[in-house]
Length: 280
Image (cartoon, rainbow, N blue to C red; front, side, top):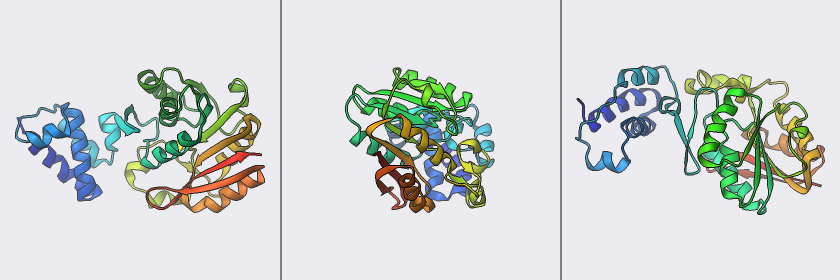
C-alpha cells in the first residue's frame, strides 16, 4: 500500500502535465484529502502514513481526460461550504463568491431574493445563510441542476425554494409577489471564445450554463432584466456576474431597460466581472 506522500506525488505528476506545477499540486491535494478522508494537517504531519484509495487508477485516467477535480471528488468549495457538483451543473468559481459578498453587504434583513440560473444553488444557498430572515428562491431550467441544488439546500439552507423556470421566458409568475433582490450568473461566454478555454471546461462542464451565440451575447441578461423590472420592489436591485469584455454593453443595456445607479465592480483579478443596478 502506498503512503499519503506517494499518492500525492503520483497525482501531482499527472495533474501538473495538464495544469502546471502549482495548480497540479493543488488538484492532487484536493483528491488525497477528499478520497482519503483526511485533513491537510494530516497530510503535512504524517505524510508517510499508508493511505488506500481503491479507485486511484480511475482517478488518474479521469485526470488525463481533463475531467475537473471537483467532478472527480464530487464536491466544490464555496463560501465555507462543500457543495455537491457533477457534470449537470457549473462548478462554482471564486469570483461568484465575490458577487455573493456584494449582494449580502447591501441586501436588507428580511429581503426577498431570487437567484436566476441557480445551478448548484451556490448563490441562493450562500445568500440564505448570510442575509438574516431572508426568503430566497432559485430558478433553473435544468431538472438535473435543480436536483443537485435541492440536495445542497437540504444540507445548508433547507428553507430556500427551488423552482423550474426558463430565464429566457417570463418567470415572474413563478414567485409570490415582489422581490427586493434578483441575482444571476447566466450563460455569457460567446461560442467563438470556446477555443480559448481549457478542455476541463469545454469537454465537461454543461454548455447550457456557459455559452451564448456570438450575435447576441447579452441575450440572457436582457431577458432577465426585463422580467426583473416587473418583479423588483421600488428601489430593488439586480446583480449580475458578467463577461469582462461586455461591461460597457451591460451598463448601456441596463440603462436602456430603465434601471438607474448602474455600478460595475472588478473581481480579485482586476477584471470587470460584476454589475448592479437599481429599479427606478
